[in-house]
Length: 339
Image (cartoon, rainbow, N blue to C red):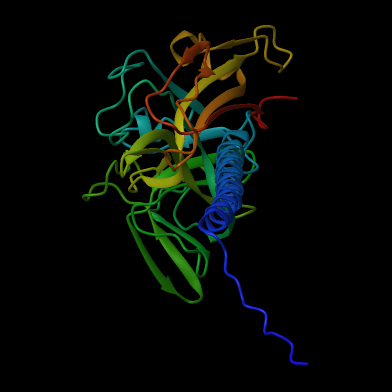
């Protein structure tokens, strides 16, 4: 007996619509999970980058501030002869190891910024300046000429890396002298450092007399004046550093604000008794530590779903963008002053 073939039946329209609806619900759930995961990743990545930028900014600032006033083995009791013409100007005021400018408005600082010293700083942000020396291991091998030695020549170890117009300090621990290099030539395995008067070098030397023979135990260091400030680049605030007369260099993007306070020692025990802004510091020689507060922002916008209020320097602000922000603070002791 033949069996009748079973007819194949399809889905009804209702069943197809139900299946499509279930599929869309599942697909929507997957998309929601993926979108949520992507947003969480963006937030975490932006936070990590912001915190890393803050760590690096503090690392650079702390390293230089900590060494403010370092002049090799020439301690506070060393006799220093400064031969520069304009030795009390901003870049060469080497007797003041730490310096600061308090932002008193969006366009002004107290004390007034030296003309051209800080290029295009962002208003409302403090500026901190550190002075000292860098480098080392450049030994004096010969210092010809008289007593006291008044020759414009100072011979040092070969390949010193020094350049014409560098401002340098030579010291034997008991005495020190500051001068500008006006010429360099190499002969007999030595670099001959010339520090003559006259010429076109700025600031130039007022005298070639260093006041002391540094042949025994003498060592040369480059003088360094480093200014830290905030400036815009591509519409974003960034921490900048300017060393001497060199061009300013970008260090870290996303540093929106910097506020600096200086710890003064009022009773001579080499510890900070009070923290003051730069315009209220009474004696820069008594500053033994620096408190730095940075407001960091994410370099990317639209990280948050809505503007995120933040509190910095005692003020709560609701921004117009959707970046994330975080405040960081650290205290740095001046190693050459604090105990």
